[in-house]
Length: 116
Length: 114
Image (cartoon, rainbow over all chains, first blue to last red; front, top):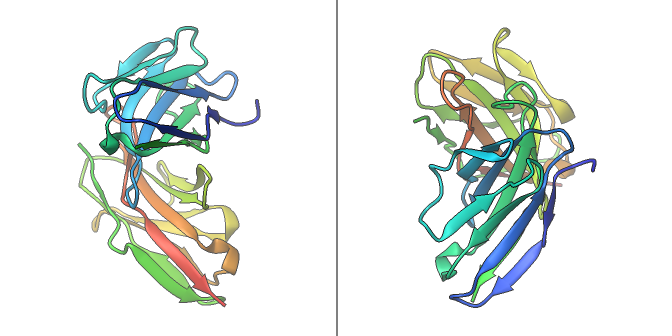
């Protein structure tokens, strides 16, 4: 597609439930990033994929969070046993090659997750 | 690890007035610097970036920023703002000697009044 697509755009779930958030990057972009943006804050790094592998997952807050990218394109962020503190906008970005600094990073519109 | 400070959480300004949004980063041997804009309910859009070379960087929508290594700053400026510039602006820094993953500031809300 022309841009980074994230689905769903909004997700409301009950505390304790499991959720999956999907990111479809720009075709050909090998690098993919997940960020979390809480209200009034800047995006906070979660995890970075280069191809199919997680090159850096140091931003994942705990073991309830997990992400996959099995074929090197679409990625899914998975959150188990959701808590109210997980409520945020989850942003996905993609770029060519490593780092993406030369082009910047193309962001999707995000998924707004609300845990009630 | 790099950190970014955006000193102003909110900047109100009248239409056609100049504006400066401030950004400071923690020191490093070298950095890549970015400004992103986020309109309501949209993703982040790259305004401009500094990788190397000229310290004055021009971006889209008439914005520019100046890299100042001695002051570790990368302030964003526009000589005359429009109502449509009302948005959230984020400064970001990445370490080309490290992971390249950008670290973002908390954002500055630019509010342009008619």
